Amino acid sequence: MARLLGMLLACALAMWAAPCALADGDGGDAAPAEPGAAATTLTDDVTDTENLLGASASKVTDAIERTDRETGAHVKLVFVDSFNAEHGQKPEDWASQLLESTKPQPNTVMLAVASGDGNLVVVVSSNSDEWLRDRGTVDALSEAAAEPLTDGGQDWAGSALAMMEQLRQAKRTATSTRLSTAGVVAMGASLAALVVIAAVMVVVRRRREVAADAKREEESDAPDRSLN
Image 1 (spheres, helix red, strand yellow):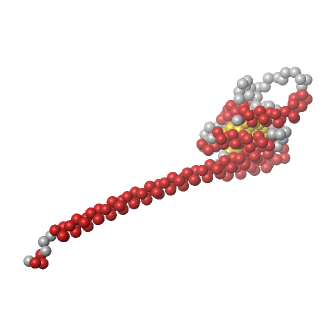
Image 2 (cartoon, one colour; image 1 turned 45 degrees about the horizontal axis):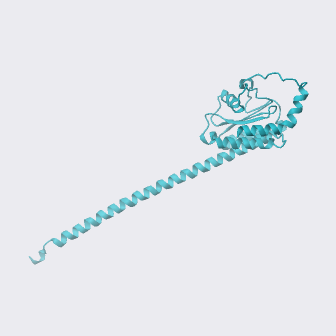
Image 3 (cartoon, one colour; image 1 turned 60 degrees about the horizontal axis):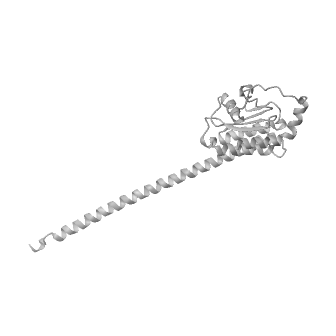
């Protein structure tokens, strides 16, 4: 899924990325990029070396704070020209390496976009909760982030905002599922308790009936002393 999203994003960016490449050189081979995620330095929650967010930067940072409050998830955004990944290194591995190098807080989500390479990837920290590490959650976040950049779009801020909206939705779904599961478990425990109580009552009632029958039998077998 992540590879497919990367291919779609690369196609969407090709219309404007290619002219930039031609303007920077004479068509010869590009100089090799410095390898490794260490070449990229994160700055707080938003790293935007290309100033792609522009006037929407404050709106995006407000959304980061809101997402943190509502979900407990910490969002990091990385907008660079190139991931400068090592030869053969997958974008997901590059982004994960970069995120883990920051010793992230639990439940940290990072959206990394390389505008020049046409790469987009969403990764979560290894110390995240299960609902956030779930493959379905990560794929949904990637799809949401990629949508504003497809069909020739260049809505970089929209990409970040869409991912965070999807993140809040994922948290609501996870919370609802957890509460539903807890409700089913509680109901099951209550039913089990009722069954036990009913069983105890049956046993007690049966014992009382047996005792009453024995007493009546004993009284019927006893001699009539009124004749003496």
